[in-house]
Length: 92
Image (cartoon, rainbow, N blue to C red; front, side, top):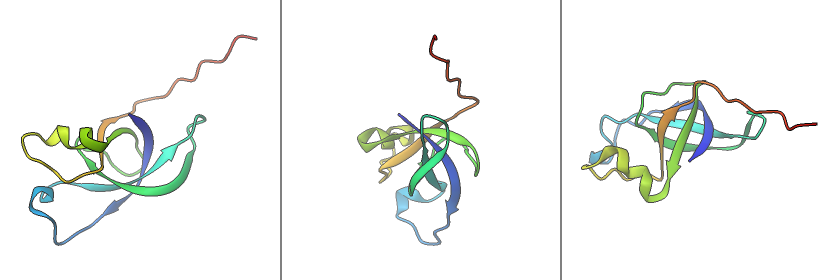
């Protein structure tokens, strides 16, 4: 799993049948300090996330698991919304 922030939505009036009714969101990775970084990428939403929320997502074969038994053609799927991130300070 990786952390990202939802930075936008994708609207598609014509979709492959298994994608009908599924929300498509635009994500950017979060670095160790919790800052948005890198290029945006597309992910399906399995949990009801919205723009501005921090999320965690899965990639590859596991990205289709939340939609079982349907086989959604996806490379990345949001599987959780992050409430907070705690970075403990290293001992001095």
